View: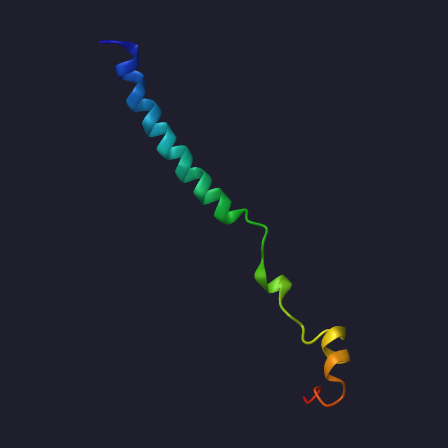
Length: 57
């Protein structure tokens, strides 16, 4: 039995483990938090275009 026959299944198994590990850590360590980038309302360009008539709250 050759060494390649023995190590190939091991490498495939380790590749699956590493792929799963990367998916797990990417999800946990993702720095994007949408709640930090929420819209706070119309900006200055919107107010310039709509004026006082568009600012009904």
